[in-house]
Length: 211
Image 1: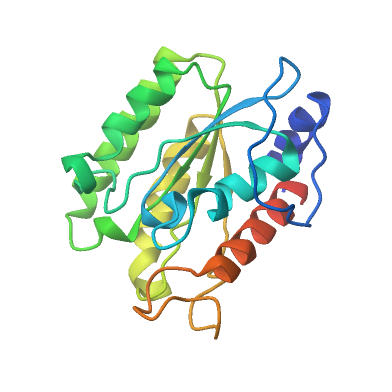
Image 2: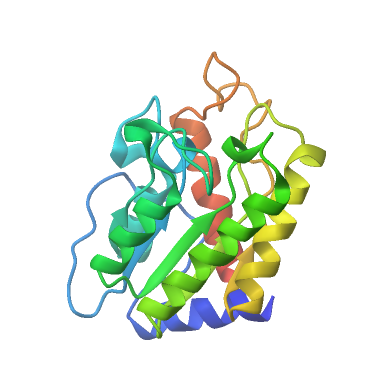
């Protein structure tokens, strides 16, 4: 896709490789040459049940040498409040305060059961806030990841966020479900990815960025 290719080119100009291999977990070394990325998400992005360094944003950050702020909060969504009674609004304000250059923002199954019009309005407000506060920010929308919810359930959330992000000039990455129902990739609760599941997600993110 042209949008993802443009993002890959941006990362390449910063001296970052975009390869479909997952590096060993660890902290990226931030320098002025490495893009400052903020990730806004839920339990999957925050790495519930694994170490923070084993969550897919950290794995991708190592591979691409990102300076990463993983702002994700378990249980949160665009309108659903999770841990610390926070929804995505708080994460967005933190991304703005950090002056992120690129913001990855994912749809969330935590918003299932909420009125889709309300969720869509919250998505529009969130993206508008980011673009107003950070005019040069590059937005990347991500489809919802879930070990339990079906594709038909997630489709309205994904479609709404894709429309909002692309209309704002951002890119959209459809990640599929790299860990759902795969032995060894999902924790016993059937919802959250294991370390292997997080690695599978990271590989797909890298592949989509390289498309």
